[in-house]
Image: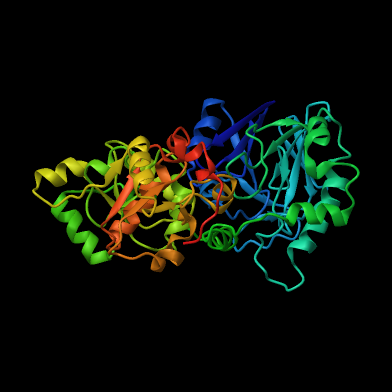
Length: 473
């Protein structure tokens, strides 16, 4: 028996490959199919089943494409109603995979169809559970993300189901059973996830706040529903894509999105398709020279979730600026969260654009120490802290206004185009995204603080009462 976790850090998502005696199963695959097929080929195995723990909100699953290419059977847990060919299993139903078996445990709560898959070894002993978004390491799934198809399906209602699922289906299992969750720290599908991506069930019973034996249902519901922030705007659209199906093959999306366009051709497509241009280079390179009107969202961070949070139309045509050789990576990462309409990339990058004599812009930046000197002399400077509200509330610079990147589309009207704004986040990634959006919308007087709050915290601004008082924009 072979079990492999395939963890994708930028989405904090875990898919799984299980194999026994020449037969393989994939659990919760991402959009790209080749990695799973290659694993099976390397091991001389045939993919027999594709198990889906639920209809995902934070990514588009590759289960249909993978099934078309391999002949594998897609399996959902009870109550799922997919809009395509799939097998909807009964609670406690068992599927044979080589010399091992996988049992379906219906565990509603995160969603109504949420299910946990119990892997039994060659001797029939419980070996591991693949919990999807029901149980994480250090946390449990949010009960507020499901599409509200019925008025009675509220977070409190789902929280009650989740309590029962955990107590009746998961916690009675042996302590040595391994827990393989669907996500780790950084995912928006929970609020208190550990950086660890696997554990024993026994340790989770001892350390996971939601599994405390003294919690009654009312207390549990209160704990799992408090402190939840609004989910990213693309989540409901991803759910519908996973429910309805009928999506294009990842191969076609890659072929279209990796079409190299020379600068003048790039310009023409940009204008004709009213595309959004995303510059995926590093936060250090973008400020030196960028194409006016482009938006920075760097690949070397949480690229796809930020695209999902900021670009509200999943059918929006997208053009890419990438480092050489990374165009396919960018296209795939966009498709993972449902952005299938990438129409090409700038061949030769910004360097080719400059050689063509076309216009570029720059983003002014200032060091934290230089800003400290400036701010102490003139505390009336407009300072925008673009971190999340919870980060801002924890600690911030006196006089800084909280302007979270997450809500920039709703709050941009609050800024004045004739004012100069200094911007920081935690380390610099989000502030460059913010600056690029503002400059694309005509806010020219934007200055990025290098190193963000991490750098500012080493100055006197964070060593006194400068870092304690809340202000309003």
